[in-house]
Image (cartoon, rainbow, N blue to C red; front, side, top):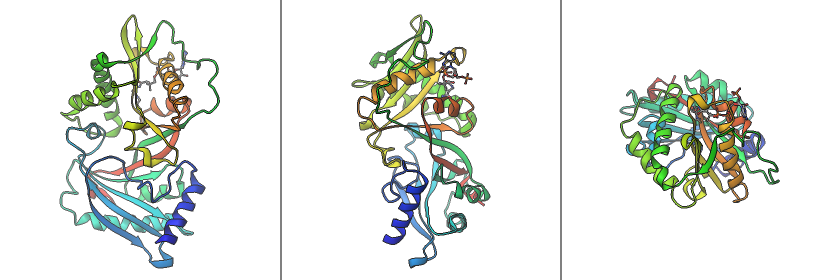
Length: 322
Ligand SMILES: CC(C)(COP(=O)(O)OP(=O)(O)OC[C@H]1O[C@@H](n2cnc3c(N)ncnc32)[C@H](O)[C@@H]1OP(=O)(O)O)[C@@H](O)C(=O)NCCC(=O)NCCS
């Protein structure tokens, strides 16, 4: 197994220098949920071990924000592949996993998903993931800190008469309102059903985001909030830190601009405030999720310096895995 781990590590390093070592990051959707199952699946054995993965069954906290962006029961596989034919190895591993899930009670229920979080740049696996009926839904994107000073303000920093200011504890309502808008907007692409607990979960998150020295900014026109960026500092972003070798990381939970104010540079101005804060604070990387099919997200975040690191592939319900 040590030799397999060394080869899997070498493979990931060659594919993307920002990935963690496979043993450190489990490649499954991160989070603090209780996981069970732990079934190990292997293709080959000993020196001929070509693929290995552990299955985790998780159920996000019904009161937590994670549930607003995904299924209620998740069956996650963290595959590692090595050897000259990684696509074939992954293909066989997913076939084993499919057989495993066929025996798991409830894996055919509506609110379930079979989930593989796969390195975005590991393009060799894409055909196998598609063949098994998995769809690429969300992306974890990363922006590495700029070591050099940013110099002049970013191009979108002066967004006309719109003022950007750091948010504080009294801004909970605006953060919750914009957070709910993001959840509603993302539901078009994530296929997540509306969750009754979203508002309460957002209120809880907002209180944390707006604690000491918040890394949350609001854009205001005439004193009225029109946009927001809300980021967890490293102490609150440890749950996602294992997804990259860079450390420490911050995590942007929410980015939003009201529809009538979009495309005028407000989003860019908000991102510039964030980056002007996180870079000097020693944050090595800022991570965020966006929905692959959100037509606003990928181009926008790409312009702000983010690029895909992981792609989450899902089959829903879990037993629809082919
Ligand atoms: C993603 C989002 C936050 C971007 O905010 P935004 O204020 O529209 O972003 P910007 O205006 O800075 O940049 C977007 C566009 O404006 C252009 N732009 C940037 N600065 C500009 C400026 N100073 N003047 C004019 N246009 C500008 C950009 O080039 C870009 O061009 P495009 O319209 O052709 O795409 C916003 O679209 C949004 O809220 N979307 C819905 C929710 C969502 O997707 N959230 C992100 C989930 S991960």
